[in-house]
Image (tube, rainbow over all chains, first blue to last red; front, side, top):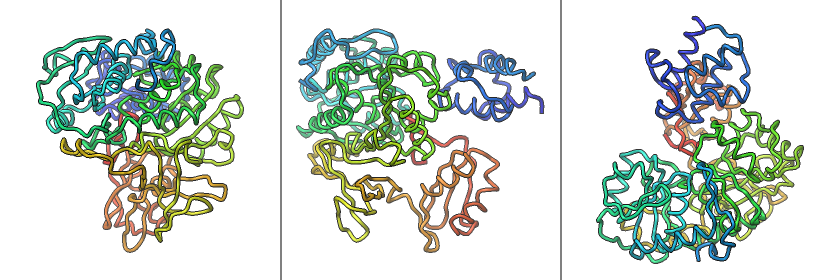
Amino acid sequence: MTNLEALNGIFCEVFSVDAGALGSGFDNRSVEGWDSVRQLSLATAVEECFDIMLDPEDILELTSYDNARTILARYEIEL
Amino acid sequence: MFLDLDKKERTRIAAIDDSGEALTYGELCDFAAEFRRYLPERALLFLLSENCHGSLLGYVGCLAGGIVPLILSARTEESLYASLRDLYKPAYLWAPEAMAETLGYAEVFRAHGYVLLATGNAPVAMHPDLVLLLPTSGSTGSPKLVRHSLRNIEANADNVRRLFGLTGGEKAMAILPMHYTMGLSVVASHLLAGATLLLSGRSMLDRGFWSMLKEATSFTGIPYSYELLMKMRFTRMDLPRLEVITQGGGKLTPEMFRALAEYARDKGKKFIATYGQSECTARMAYLPAELALEKTCSIGFAEPGGQLSIVDADGVETFEGEATGELVYRGENVTLGYAYGVEDLQKGDENHGVMHTGDLARRDADGCYFIIGRLKRFLKIFGLRIGLDEVEDLIKQEYKADCYCKGDDEKLVVLVTDSALVDALPGFIEEKTHLFHKNIEVRLVDAILRNEAGSVIDQ
């Protein structure tokens, strides 16, 4: 599985959506039920999956699919 | 006046919400007078709440004016809202402007982003002591309501004010929803003290929350709030104004409890764990800050104005010495009782100041209470007593995974979100509880359901 597939899998699992729904419009404003519980579970899943420890600042930034990709790039995870 | 609001300095700030605007005690009093002019005495009103000025003003306006509100989350699931509306037939709604059109009633007036709507429903008969209705446990899943008297609210506010030694200088971070008993307790106790509420409806993972927290002198959270704070490594943050962190709404893990107690010791702050129920207008017991390191996971003693006791398996009630049994609370904050329908609003006090909590507690030789389970949360399979909380704790400790246990006397059902546990758990539980694995069913679910405050709900 590629890193991108793994990231998509995390989003699909947390928000119960198909990978097709993921894209630049997928964020905390447009997605119903994007709350702190989901955002934290997203953060935890990303940390476990890519074996990294996110900075609190990055957890706050984890408010969209695009941001997640940008954040992972900072941790040198190639997508 | 309600909570002596008219005795505070008019220019003192009662609340700041996410808009950044300040609301003074003078404005609260003026609004209460205005609100009252639009409503007949003893009207039943649904307050669709968000943690913002409009909602706070509606609450104060109702309680100061003898209007009886049922406080519901503005995000209450539509069919539950509809069933409550049809069941209780409120004459008025106080709702966020954005919702007003959808609700489809005649507008009476609007202020601070909220609208007063008249439904045209006839007045309903209510007991004169009834002043407030809240959903049970802040859960959005049940139409069962708790009936409060004015004395309940004032006694709770005063008990909480005394136990924290609240003064007008406090700035309390108020993020727990106002429709949740403990959220409302934070509001009432700080208003009574003439303090300032930092009222926020934001997610704790929103930057706005963190800039507000830097101003706060106290933070009140539930266990999940502290999981979030820890994940955000708040113990390493510079929060010089923060003096008190306090917790209620469920049990912290021993690790978390110790971490918070040590944080408080190292940074010169106070960590105060509390215990309460919506049936008792939130708070009932607290562990004094100086005992936090010594009495891990204890709920301490009864709050000022209250009394705790234990009724053991033989039905014997004791007030001191070591004992284990059902926790009983006495105090003026014990609510009037439940309502299941509009007829129940005519009922008076059914509890008479005594609450059998349904929680199983242990009292140690020093008089400190510890919650060790819920009386009804156990199964008896093949004569084996299976404590559901206990099984959950075992799983959480072993696998660091979220889970929820339920079942009947045939089968223990464990809900998990991690598919890896489906195969592992039956063997693990069998080993720990000696329950035959065929009587254990592990179900994979999308999420363990929590209410808006983050507490696990029955599912």
